[in-house]
Length: 107
Length: 125
Image 1: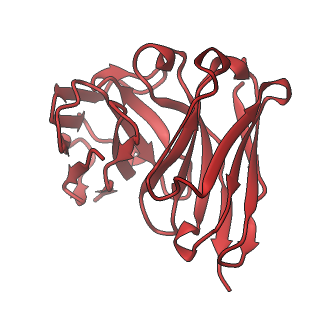
Image 2 (image 1 turned 60 degrees about the vertical axis):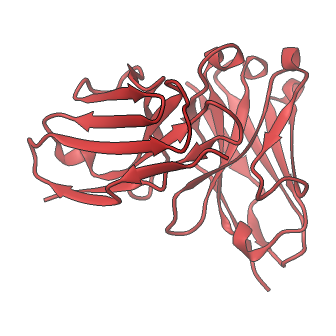
């Protein structure tokens, strides 16, 4: 199975900060990476697919990049509502796998 | 509006069985691949498996942790997705979500663009 390793596992940032979360795949997966946000007590929400395509309705402060094994999710100008846990997922091949999550706290 | 509503969760003893259902509305259910994802209490997301659409012969894939014990099926006439869980273990305790894949999944990128609220399964004696 393809392993997805996220870093950091948690971080704390202030409103207005630029935040970057990294996801590394255990093998090359082209750009078959999705990013999800899960707010506390809520259902996961799709942010980006195909590494860099923004899902409809998602604010443009979210962006993604990367290919093959290294991927990043960037949030520019962090907002209070961005708190939660962020997950990457590879859909290059089944079984699809998620990263372990990055918990984002707003200072 | 897309709606996915899971049901069937509850308390079951180790070794027992449970069948989850997911009722879909607001979209053409038969066109979409559908997945199950679970989340143990306080833990991250774990992909459970998926079922393709009819043109793809309703093919299924599973995570290694559930393969041979869980079966995913669907009834397009009822806009419903199912997860039959057998030989349940304590480590299967989780909230189970059904989720819809985007239409491009058939020939391109797969991503889960809508999720149900989840149903809790507790495996304990």
